[in-house]
Length: 485
Image 1 (spheres, rainbow, N blue to C red):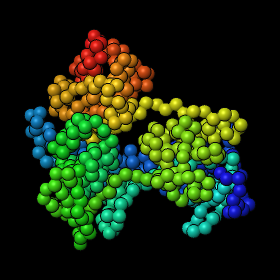
Image 2 (cartoon, one colour; image 1 turned 135 degrees about the horizontal axis):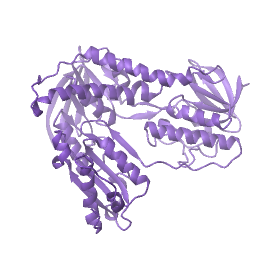
Image 3 (cartoon, rainbow, N blue to C red; image 1 turned 90 degrees about the vertical axis):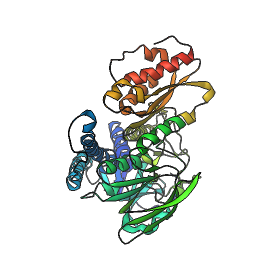
Image 4 (cartoon, rainbow, N blue to C red; image 1 turned 180 degrees about the vertical axis):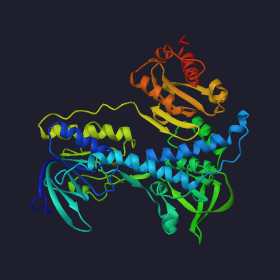
């Protein structure tokens, strides 16, 4: 923070470290700093309970689990089991379980904050005043001020809403709203085929909700490999309407919901189509909650997101005693990454206060999973981040993979990227059954720095889905000139 501030006033409390945000990153920063002997104050406006537990990872998986159960019942006839072709879904019962289990997960995260005293947690929105001070804001004014030796910003993110949805009123929803439903709606238009849009859109479809997913630019999740993206689009699009490159002509509020007019393929043109839905679920990305922190007063240049330049190794902002972590950093907006960043920000804040040199962050191998069916996953470097001339692409079409075919889950494709010369695994993009588990195996060997021949020397059982991964690795090995099988 700056050396002085015209907003300075006597502090109501003095601590070593202020952590703005009591989510996953903030709680980890607090825990690490306290273990180093620091006095820490958490500042959070609420609701407490972390994004993952309240409106993210856990409630979405509860909805997906219900959808998978209904889908499995409907598909039983393909195995010769005489069950009804259309599952009778009790929407109220589905959402009651989602809310009940969601509240249980939130309760676990609240066990930490509920035990904090008045000098450990202040409820309100934090704002940097400079001069080592942080204000806690009320409705429109400063309520209290704390002075600190350092600050960790871990304020999370929120859904990004574009102006085209402004007139929809209560018929526009975000993922936060879904998990408070007491029943399932008849129909939903989903805008954004990213992680949230794909997961919730497919889950709602499988639970009997009429769903149509719209996107722009042809993107499907974070996939960058054209063949893997096409495989994901084909698999999911075979089940429900998916338009990843639509031109939206209008989104209008009606008496009973939302009317959407669109052209399915923006580049190819085509007829204008129209359909009405009960709700528009907007999943068009998230933005960091940093716009009301007073960052503009730090004397640093801000980017288009309103963020100053951050040292990605130390997580420090400029040369100031301020650190940034979690979804507010927007580096890797995933829970395990937020936890790692929070821990590192807390450690470096402690080092700064204790007069120790800051430590560089050693990140784990990148790992991302989308829990659609088939699942989508990425590890290490994405295809778009690689030099095509420097790698070979080991591939397998999961349509012919034995164990996947046994379970009628033989969809998707795996691409592994291996470096010419060193033969090391550099990354992978995949869509297919059990991709969440295959991606973990790949992330582990990637982090260990193993070569393709070394990976192939590891055990593969039969018959398992992992044999499909071995096929892709064997393809890469052959292109590298290795005899490893």
